[in-house]
Image (cartoon, rainbow, N blue to C red; front, side, top):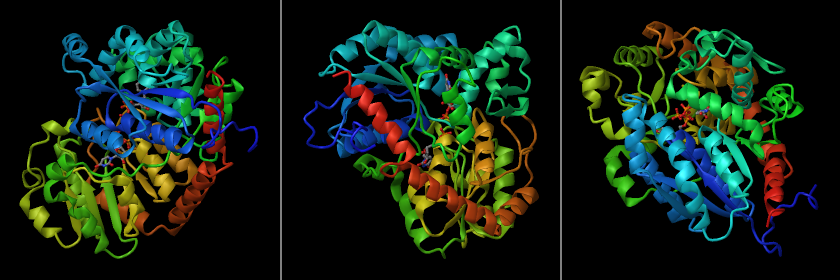
Length: 485
Ligand code: UDP
Ligand code: UDP
């Protein structure tokens, strides 16, 4: 396909297409957009603009955006100033998750701010790529401006199929989101009631309203990019493309796993992190494949009693561990001391073989470190793709939103193991230390799971290599954008 792929080879006479990326909020959404920006700009010679909504919700996001533009000056920055819309959304949904409240302000701002921003973005846009959380508002604006609009979905292809099908499910069940049962996604799988994202059981929840509106809007997009690869989720990708899930979807480009981008830490970040970057030195001092890495992602904190059980479980499992603890949803609010949260006694007892930190760690670097043998993960999709690319087996402990659907993908693909009855946010159940210790020890001793995870890594590497399925999909997307110049 080399001659027809339309890849913008450096030196090609064609004008590079100007692609404008429109992420929503939270590191879980910003990080994959950064990877897409770099893949398109550095990898496929496109002219890329990245929109940034200001102020960002978390400090991690503002540091990340600054580092991206410093390292990749070719990626243009488009700022979206949101203060008025933030005030309106938070007044209407008091107490809403700050990241979902931000999706809402972006959704309200898009019809007002997007047009002028695109008009002032220099080169006319050949494509707008909007985060799934913004799909239903971005598509009509783009259409009005006669710019093709693609949706970027940064979760599993299985979750994409669930999302695309969910409005059909609601319509067939009288439209009442209050009575969600098991959802049979045609051609893909049955998502049991217990794996449906919590919020969707409440039709009035801010997340549900957005989720359904965005699901319905998918058919109106010009294409869907998903950070997944065919070999890991063959049924879901095939069913999305064949029309089995819902008829009338646009082309689905499976472009994952998008590769991590190494960004230099800005002066600010280094300062804010203080001396906490010693996780690198600590990892270097550990034997090969001896460490359990534990993280529940960037945007949720475990309940205090669950944090205590996890601490006791890690202590009892007998293995070395690196644990990134989060005590609050937004990092700026996470002021408590580790000792207060976990007890000085615990920190002293595990000093020899455990490192506990509240700071941001470079997770891809951690997963790529020889010392790391197992990832206890909430299965946020970025974490799953990073584990897949590095071949680190996952002990799945999904907590929220799409994470159980993702955990099923992990287990089926052989990337790891999932104890399905482990607690889920909103349930009272606390998983006890003994059980955590037992599962961690079992997974650490499981040679088969390690071997299968290495197989997933090899398949991921093939997908993104020149000529691989994901590489071809991204090239095809770029070719279509070039057709617009
Ligand atoms: N991450 C990181 N260091 C941390 C915490 C998170 O690098 O200390 C990164 C992680 O590698 C991933 C993203 O933040 O790329 C989190 O996204 P994910 O989808 O895994 O979970 P979410 O935070 O959205 O729940
Ligand atoms: N999501 C979605 N539609 C929306 C908002 C979010 O499909 O309108 C997806 C999102 O991409 C993710 C899941 O729902 O797959 C959970 O959303 P969240 O914002 O919590 O994603 P995370 O922060 O875990 O990446």
